[in-house]
Image (cartoon, rainbow, N blue to C red; front, top):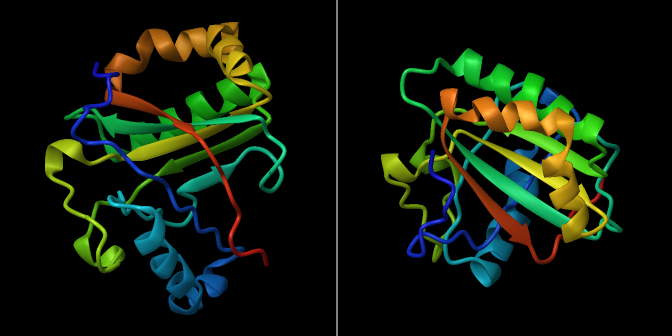
Length: 185
């Protein structure tokens, strides 16, 4: 299973947009305008993905700005693994294991199939070849980088690390240097 982030394919950042309901998502074009404008200032490459209903789970309350260290895991599904099995692995195995291990901030996402029209930001690369596409992500927050290491060594996480190769072909971890909520409800 690939764990090393290719040097020629770094990810500049992740924009998370959360809607309180399906009805609220209808206002997406108005809310996304600010995100698209910001992407041009901050990012060279955006891995534009969307989730369907139930595709994102927040295991902790809100967005805790006080979390000392965040890591984003980008996950690639193994060929032959059905979408339902992948979603169950991310939401029903990875999420609970990290939550029980004590993650302070935790979100799991599984993505709909990639579509070019999702992120039309001018001046930002969206060229995601098939072999570089991700199918899910996990955002983990802890008090420090050392605390993230302790989460990964926990008994709860050991089981998913041992069998991740049966569901995933890649798990790339990115340290988040700065996390800023841009739009508050």
